[in-house]
Every structure is written in structure tokens, then in C-alpha cells.
Length: 88
Ligand SMILES: [Zn+2]
Ligand SMILES: [Zn+2]
Image (cartoon, rainbow, N blue to C red):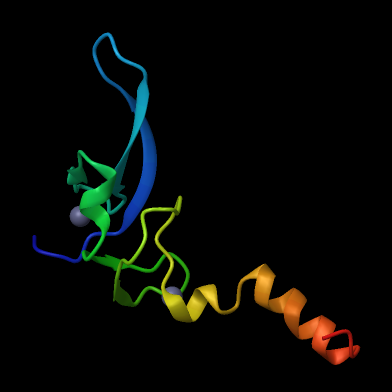
């Protein structure tokens, strides 16, 4: 069944080598994965937070999360609080 993959970074061991990371689709019954981290950039993924599809722009994540959901991340919440109390 065709679907938009839902990427998560996982560690896999290869023969005789150090462990390395790949991005794997976490949908049940889907064995798709990207053998190189760089291949994730520009791919469509399902967001783990909101479930919408989006284009991945970075490989620096453990679970795929879209820009909108990243906007609600801890970092921006801290920024909001600092603004509220007049620090920034
Ligand atoms: Zn998939
Ligand atoms: Zn999202």
C-alpha cells in the first residue's frame, strides 16, 4: 500500500563496522528505510506530532516533526515566557 513514510532515526549495526544511523519508516508493515542520512533531505514525511505530511529540510532529528510543530517546541515556549516577563 502506498503511503507517505513516517521517518524516525534508528541505529543499525552493519557487518564489522560501527553502528550507524538510518532513517526508517515507522508505519506498521512498512520496511522502507534510507541507507544514508543525507537522503532524508527533500523527502516527504509524516509529522509525528500532528500527522500532516511535510518536506524534510534537515537530517538532525530523531523523529520527523514539521515546522509548525517545531514552532511549539520547548525553545519557543521559553522565548514566549521571557517575552511575557519582559526579559527580551
Ligand atoms: Zn513507509
Ligand atoms: Zn506537525
